[in-house]
Image (tube, rainbow, N blue to C red; front, side, top):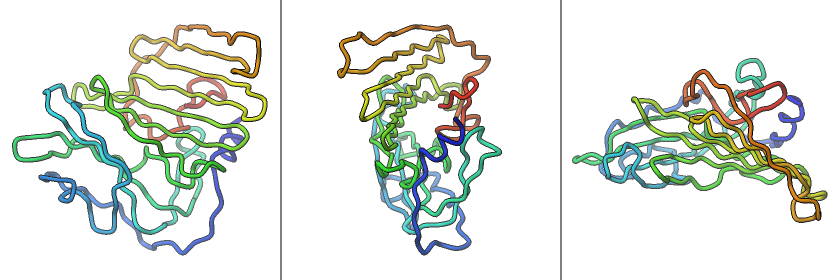
Length: 235
């Protein structure tokens, strides 16, 4: 299963790539988006909304480097399955709104999937969202078997905690599907299986307890497909 996930995600590309690349340290403060975007980086997506419960709209931004590099990315168990790919690095930046502009709240160089990590469907990145104080990050990819991932992080106790997630995958030809919805706060998992609209049989949904000692954060959950929740079940 682990090998299938790796093959499922990867695309092949030959290109000239940047040497001696190093992620920049983003500006600690800025009055506008233009002030926080480093040289040779561009904005792929941005969203505003209240993330620290102060009733003021904050800012989340995804940046991409202008050139491809040779980058080692984790798959499988997040440590041993490291694969070198040639692609453009991406950064997730979160800024809190202050009286003087924006204050850097988080810089993450790993979690956002790159453009080559969506398989045959191309770039897996989908628009971010902010709702009820949660930042949602969404991705989609695959080939005949397609997948949709969504992660909702919330800022609390000076950390970014993963509170909810979903892993939906389906077969484009047969309609076979599995939809897993995770509620990490209440330790619940809801699993729906079936054949979608192509079948007269009603999809089956079960709700399970989901024991979890500690909630994952950006630090302990590096990137999609690296958390083995149970044997051969990755998120």
